[in-house]
Structure formats: C-alpha cells, structure tokens
Image (cartoon, rainbow, N blue to C red; front, side, top):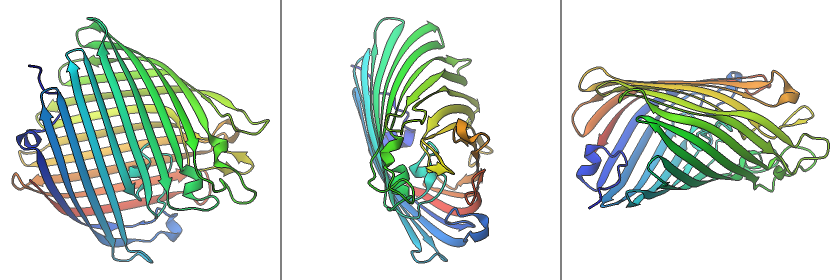
Length: 397
C-alpha cells in the first residue's frame, strides 16, 4: 500500500482531523492609514482572530480546509473603527502512484492590509476599504525516467478592490493574472537537481474606471504578457542546509499602449533562497528575488507607468531560546523602479518584525512583538513609516 502524501503536517495536526485556535491581542499602531507622517493617525486597539482547520490524510490523498476570521477594533478611528477580514483555504494532494502526483489549492482573502492582499508588493498602501484576492493553482508532477521529471502548473490570481472611481485602487489594481509553468528537472547527483524552466504570464486589468484623473484612460492600457526562461538548481549542502536558485530573463510586451510608447522590455529574472536548520527548533532563511510586477502608480508627470521592476531581499530567523521560549525575526527590503524614462525614481521599502512567544502549556501560548514598515519614495506625498506593537494570548486545540 502506498504511503500518504508528505505535506508537512505537525504531530498535532496528524493526531486528529480538525483543530481550533483563537488569538487575542492588544496593540498600538502609530499610522493606521499608512499616510505620510505629517497626517498620520494613531490608535490603540484589540485584535481577535479565531480559526478552524480540517486535515484529512488518507492513503495517497490529503485534503485540507481552513477558515480564519480577524477582527481589528481601533479605539480612535473615524468613521469606521473596525476591520473585518476573512481567509478561506483549500488544499488537495493526490499521489496516483510512485511516479505521478497532482496538487491543487485555492485561497480566498477579504482584507485591508497590503501585505496580505498584494504579497508581490504591487501596493504598500492601505485602501482602507475591503478588497478581494483569490489565488488558485494546480500542479502536476510526473517522473519521466530515473533521472528526469516534469512539473507543469497553472496559477490564477484575481484582485478586486471596493474603492472605485478615477485613480482609485480599483482602477489601479483590479486585475486577473494567469501563469503557466513548465519545469524539467534532472537529478545531476545525490542531493543536486538541475532545473530548466519556462513560464508564461498574462495580466488583464478589469476595472471600468479611469486609470487617472482627467480624460478617461482605460486600465487595459497596462495589460501585458511575459515569457520567462530560466535555469537553476536545488541543492542539499547538508541535511540541514538547503539552497535553491532560478536565474534567467523575463520578456514582457504591452499590446494596448499608444503609438510611440515602448511596447516591450527585457529584464533579469532571479529567485534564490537558502535555509539552514542550525539547531533543534531553530532555523534561518534568506532569499533574493528580481521580477517585474504591477504597481499602484499609474502616471508620473507625462509618463505612463505600465508596471515596475522590483529587487527584494528577505531574511527570517527562528531561535528556540528554551524549551518554551522562542524568538522570531523577519526582515525585507525592496527596491522598485518605475522605468527607464524615470531614471533614479523608485520606491524603497523596509519591513522588520520581531516576535517573542512563550508556550505556557500545549494549549496556550503568550506572545509579544513589534513591526516596523518604512516606505521611502522618490515620488511626492507617498513616503510613510509605521510602528506597531502588540501583546497577546493564543489558545489552540
């Protein structure tokens, strides 16, 4: 009988088919609207987040379902002093046999915070209204021979913002993205796998609102399609030290731009990461990524902004100080430039987070943390910084 798929479940998750949790935090946020510092508003508040998940692991098949609700209440925010967010998730993995498998999933999010809605960094600003991001994927993997395997996949991302009107978040960011991937993998030697890959990505903007103020400008002018060609490897330096690299080029074309506007561009594509489990319960991960992505800036002066080119570096450390006390750190820096016609015009974004958690018992965890965000933009009336601190208690069963 074939073993159940390895999907990284914890012992607690495999001990029963369902789990419950609830997180209660008190917080202080010194820039609740991600506004420039001169007009920033601060507030204390309370966050309550219950969640439920279902994990069914059978021979050859895994099914996971999850739902999380988050209420954030602000003591000093008018006219609406609360945020309500929802996250639904579905994951299905099936091994047809030892050589063939499929995994598919969907995540549907209603939220307000940009790091939840736009993980690629298309916007660092809050819309202060609800927005939807739905991400669905399906990946098919087959072993072609003893040394070669093929992964073929499709991903769909849908974004829809409630804020409407000319120059609104809806006009700037409502879109559907399609991404088709094919990776040929070769086992070069034990612990090393070579990758030769191709991706095709289509971005279709969907809002009927004008992209900018003034004469109507259809958001579809920023529609694009991209071809990615890359090579790389996955390598186990030791059982504890793992590395991955994808490097190549991204060829992007814009079919709806006006005559005289450059309708294509070529840029580097890089995705590299390294992880090290240096002690029991402790690990560090670092990474670098370079890719074109969408942006909430549509026009600077007389120049139309079709997208942006972003280089981002990130790091995370989780260190188990004692059997019950763990410290976590995450950091990210991103430089996003707005095109050759706007030389030296970019957004520089820093995000840092520190968290300490103490496991009181198997059901109860206490935590405290601090988050810092800083957007330093060459564009006027856009830069901000934001400090958030919190103290809370998490119960799980």
